[in-house]
Length: 67
Image (cartoon, rainbow, N blue to C red; front, top):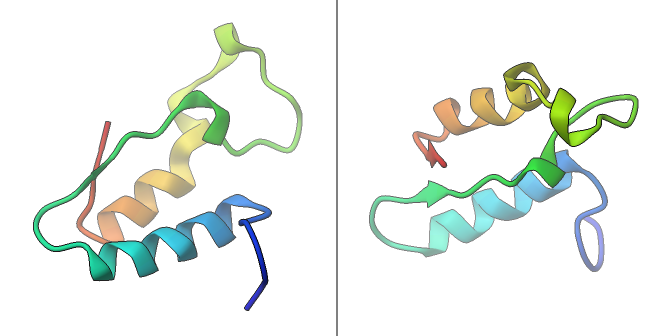
C-alpha cells in the first residue's frame, strides 16, 4: 500500500487493476510513449516494442487490449 499517486509502472498497473475491477464491460488501455520502461532515457525516435514488454505481458494476463 502506498498513499497518493503511483511512483512507478508496477504501482500504476496495480492501480489500473483495481480500477478495472470496478468498471464493467470490455476494456482497452491507451498506452502512451511516456509509459515505456527502460533503465536509461530513450529518445522518441529510438522507442521500440521491447520497451513495453512488461505492459504487454500484464495486458495479456489481465485480458486487456492495448492501443
